[in-house]
Amino acid sequence: MRRFIENLLRSAINETVDKAITRAIRDQYGENLFEMLPSGAKTGPINLMEIAMRAHHGVPVPRPLGSPLNFSPWEKILFSPVHLFRFPVPEQVGIDTSVTIGPAAKKPLTVSIPILIAGMSFGGALSKRAKIALARAAALAGTATNTGEAGLLREEREAAGLLIGQYNRGGWLNTPEKYRRLDAIEIQLGQGAQGSAPQRTSAKRIGEDFRKVFGLREGEDAVIHSRLPGVDTKEAFIGLVRRLKDETGVPVGLKIAATHHLEKELQIALEAEVDFVTIDGAEGGTHGGAPILQDDVGLPTLYGIARAAEYLAKKGGTGKVSLLAAGGLVTPGRMLKAIALGADAVYIGTAAIMAMIGDQIVETLPFEPPTSLVVYDGKMTDQLDVEKSAKNLFRFLNACVMEMEAVAVTLGKTSLADIAKSDLCTLDPFIAKAAGIPLGMVAPERQDDFFEGTDYLFPAPRAEREGGQDFLQ
Image (cartoon, rainbow, N blue to C red):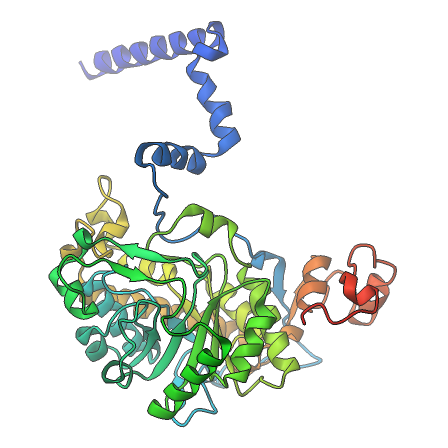
């Protein structure tokens, strides 16, 4: 009987496929289902679906977790192990993984590992259970978590050993009774996935707990403005930084989206005497933003960090102003390469969320997306196991640091902070030239010879060629 049914199904499937192929061959393209394949190949499946979504809703599509595009060619950068000219670190010698953020502040922030949990807000992005899990994992790992653009969530403050809070464009954490409870203050002026564009959460999506933490009236939308309220001039920003530093003593920093105007932005940050700068590359995640902002705005993380580190060094800020990298750093290799390029520590967001819910997504699939476990208005947030999530993320952080330590050993470095550009190489001459990384295809003493005569590939800015002012001024 079983064999009979199998043969019957096999025959039916064979006949159906034969008819479908025959029809696809005979039908004109305009009447042919096969037409979906070249159309889909032309637009791409993601763009095809987002076209349909825009047509249906008539408003920007709030895509979660950031751009699917990989702008930073991290895979073209490699670490250079040592054997004789400098010896690897003996296995019994420990690797220093600690980092001090804002060393010039009255109360510097020291973390045990160079991986921080990125700013993902309660309400605007994540549920209370998700925020508590992130905070507990960070505390277990001896690192800091970040409030995101939100008010001060009591449960997060209690669960976090170290909490960085965002002085934000919504104004929800911008009062002394709130920011004085923080271990560091990050003035949030933008992010990689959205630049400095405004954002709005409709009142109909805001529950009672959300309203309470944000200090909103019933029926009031939560609005993130394009500018920080009251900061409309460079002088006002400088005054804000200095006031927060005087009032709290904790490190006060600036978070911005990576931009081609980076050096001009950093110059003002240095004038304000910030203790740290967070550069969020174009690969940065978000709770939900317009695809055009995610795909077409900003500067890739790799180049943003390399340029920021170079500028800080040029201005004497290295060792005084901490540099934090964010945006698409989903593997320990990318994290460590960002540190080698000059970052003191890195933020992770999407990777942290995925690590947290990795073994719980079976609860959502196949009928709900995994994010429904963690986003504020997700259908399954009450099913997130906080303890399991915290342990998952802690183990992920521990594994990442162990992998980074293994690289430090083979580089002959006893501290992750000592890993630098000289420990890297690349096979891409454009990356070598742009980021100041040794070109791996030729010996160190032949680097200049290789690039000699290639000015046409790497032209100087026009003002520089014509003897004009520096192009950044």
